[in-house]
Amino acid sequence: MNRRDHADENGKRGQAKGRTAHGRAASSFKFAGILLLALFCAAAVRGQGNLGDIRTVQVGTMGDGSDAAALRTRVADRLQKSGRLRVVEDAAAADVILRGTSGIWATGTVTLHPRSKAAAETIYQGYLSLELVNRSNQTLWSYLVTPSRFRTASITDDLADHAVARLLDALANGTAGGPSAATATAGAETALHGAGSTLAAPLYRKWFQSSGLQVAYDAIGSEAGIEQLAADKVDFAASDMPLSAQASTAALHAAQFPTVAGGVVPIYNLPGLERNLRLTGQILAGIYSGAIRKWNDPRILEVNRGAHLPDAEIAVVHRSDGSGTTFVWTSFLSLASPEWKSAAGAGARVNWPVGTGAEGSSGVAELVEKTPNSMGYVELIYAIQHELNYAAVENPAGAFIKADLASITAAASDAPFSQGAHFSILNASSRDAYPISTFTFLVVPDEGLSPEKRSAVVALLRWLLNEGQKECASLGYAPLPRAMAQRELEAVDAWK
Image (cartoon, rainbow, N blue to C red; front, top):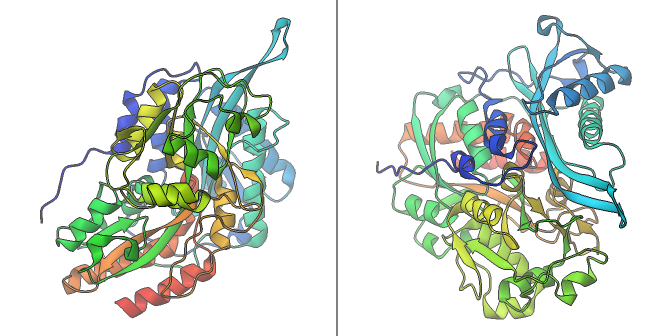
């Protein structure tokens, strides 16, 4: 098998420049902890665990940043005061351990009184990623919180309180993330090789390491992954596009299974902007078509009243490779703008009217990070990894929604899904749904796999649709709706 040696996109983050005083230079090392949290007892996956039976918890570290200790203290205090759990210091005495990683960074300042510099207030962004594991180090629950839309408390209190509220909700429901227990040990002796999506690459790498299976993965873009599958160079592909949208699949007999939902966000680098940006689909299409060239264009100012936007050219960044993220992005632009649809359309590759190309999601994030007045598009986790601002986008209900786990989950829950058909969740109708949300898929060949590899692929799919669903939220990906995951498991059984 011809395996290409592709650099790990997560490793590229260490090249980023211009970090803030909150330790941007160390962000890649902090966030790497998220990817390592799932490497527990990977040789076997036992039972699901019942969140309703948990009574005691040990609160572990929340990362190694300057705010991690304050976050841990706040989380432990809120859990103790809830009366639902007893917080203990000794892990041996705890039913479960709650631990994670975090990051908080300054994005600018706002002056409360124009004549007094002393009245300036620093604006922060950040995240808190948590996983709840049992004594066997199985993940029972995970979540990634970002600042609330209408935050009144300090950012550390806001993140901690939000995370605790989500955990208490899960405990009250008494359920974990996947529909039922699963094991991946059946195919553990057989090595698999996959390639494709960068949108879901951080999660896939985490999943493949913790599944107990031998899985190598090349994050080369959805288009290239499908091409390698069609050429029998890999055992499966990962794609953010339905097979029907890919010309290279004409002779490929394959099945596709949605694995998780994610959100593509417009990232921007606007030094000194004192507030979060709001954008509409029409504005985004105008920027990427070249019809809107400056940040202080009246159309942008109209939806960002009071914002001090610069009289500067917008440095547009897009993908240079065949990309499922690009397919999702251009599909959204096509829905928002008839002019964009007729001029450029939707696809893994389009003829970009303006802008500079970059390879891979990390390449786009890195170029935006080092280019003042720039804009690009990446999956949510890349914006967080690179500590980049990303805009709230108007949805069909007229609400400006900033992507987070809740808004992506709302879009996924709104999906008109039936077995054998995979519909877009762009512009989902729910008022709380983030409009540029998408499913990502694992694509497997109907023929050509050996019995051993087919068995290993089935074991992998069953693990992803069961235990894997509990781990995805720590990286900001939304689990599949439970009914969808169950139908997919039935489809896997039929495929095998």
